[in-house]
Length: 491
Image (cartoon, rainbow, N blue to C red):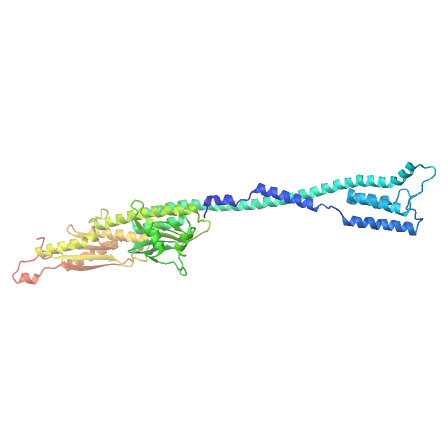
C-alpha cells in the first residue's frame, strides 16, 4: 500500500541515539574481545631464559643453582615477565623459576639451623618472586586495562563520529529535498493560479487546456492526457508529454475494462491496487472520470501515464480525484454556456446575429422577397490562413473584422456571425442586387484593412456574393407587376 508523501522523510531518518548506543556496545565488545587471556610467547621466553641460565650453571659454573648469588639471576626473568605481560605471566615465571631453583640443587640444613629457619631459607626466594610478580604484574595489568579502555573509547568515538557524519549527510540531503519541494510549491501556487483562471473560462477548449495545466502544476506528471466521450467510446482530445514511441491508446471502446470502470462506474483507478493495475494494462498510472459532481454525468476521462515514484501517494490520488470533479464541473458549465450561445439570436457584445439563426432568417426573407418582388443578396466575408497565427493576433483580427461589419451596415442590413471564431460573417442585404452586393463587399474589405494594426497588414480577407432572391424582370416587362429595382427607392 502507498503511504502519505509527507510522512516519508520522517521514516527515512535514522534513529541516531539507537545507532550511537549500538556503536558503543560494539566497540566495547570489540575491546573486550581484543584483550588477551594468555600470551603464548611469554611461556616461550620463560622456558628459554631458564634453560639458558640452567645450562650456564651446569656447564660453566658449579651447578648449585645460583644459591650463592646476590641478587639471584632468576629475578631478571620474574621482573621482566611481570612488567611486560602482567601478574598471570609473572606468577608463572616465579613458579618455573622455583622449579628450576630446586631442581638443580637444594642446600642442606646446617647444624646451627632449626627446621623452620631452613624451610624459610628455601621458601624465601620463591615467595619474594611471587609477591614481586603480583605487585609488578598488577601495575602492568592496570596499565593494560587503561590502554584497552582508551582504545575502546577511541573506537567508540570514531564510530560515533562516523554515525553522526552519516546522520548529518542524511539530514542535509533531506533538507535539500525539502528546499526543492518548497521552491516547487511556490512555483506550483503561481502555476495553479494561472491554470485555474484558464479552467474558469466559458470556452470548453480552454477549460480542457487549463485542466492539463492544473494537473501538471499540482501533481507534476511527465505524461498526461484528457479523453472525451464520443458516442460509445473515449477519444483522446489533449495529450501532454507523449512521444512517438509511446503506445498509448487513443480510443477506448465501451467493452474495455478501463472504459467500464472509469466511465461506467465513475471510479478512479490506480496502479497501487493490483486489481486496478490489470484494468489499466500499462496504459497509465492513474485515471479518473471527468464527472460533473452536481449531476453525476461523466463527460470524459483524465489519465496520467507517467510520473515520479515519490509523487505517487495517497494524497496525490485524492487530489487527482478532486481535480477530476473540479474540471468536470467547469467543463459542464462551459458546454452549457456554449450551447446557449449557439442557440441565441443576437450577440449582446457584437450586436450581430448568431449563425444558427441565419437559415431561418434566410427562408423568411426569401418568402417575403418572393411575395413582395424585391431582391435580396448575401455577402460572405472571411479571413483566410488563421491556423498559424497566435491567439492574440487572431483576437485582434476578429475584433477588427467585427468592427468593420458593424460600421459598414445600413439600417436594413442583417449581419450574422458564421461561427465563434470571429473570422467569418454573412451579411444579408435586402433590396440589393448582385452589383450592390459587390460594392458592399469591397467596402467591407477596405474598412477591415483600415482597422488592422501595421504588423498585420498582410492579412488576407476575401468576400463572396450570392442572391437569395432575384425578381423576374423579364416577366414584368411582358405585362406583369413591376418588381422593385435597386436604386428606385423603397417600395
